[in-house]
Image (tube, rainbow, N blue to C red):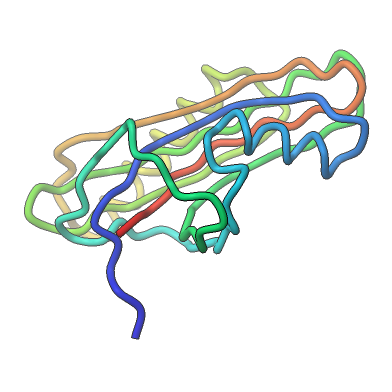
Length: 152
């Protein structure tokens, strides 16, 4: 059985690259998770998980992370990615991700709506929402990335 993560933070960044993979890698580096091995998880923040915005993840770590990203090779296109964490005190939380050809403000609004709906369908009271988002106007090949890394 895997241990439950005890800490988390929100992060978002964007980058250009010479390929889709290097654009994605550049965004990961700017988001402070580029030197880890991402293990993509879905949507639940464990109970008691503490927000630690300055958390440093050791290089090479296997990192549970919920994330959304978009890559585009259309010059001039505006892309954005956002994550939202809905928090219920003394309970678990819900993580939502969104990405699209839109502005950062649009991505943030969409992810907030998704968090509210996730709490509504669970019949949970929503105490707080945290959001992180990044926007990018593509020059050649660009990536916008937003994530919630979970740590022990």
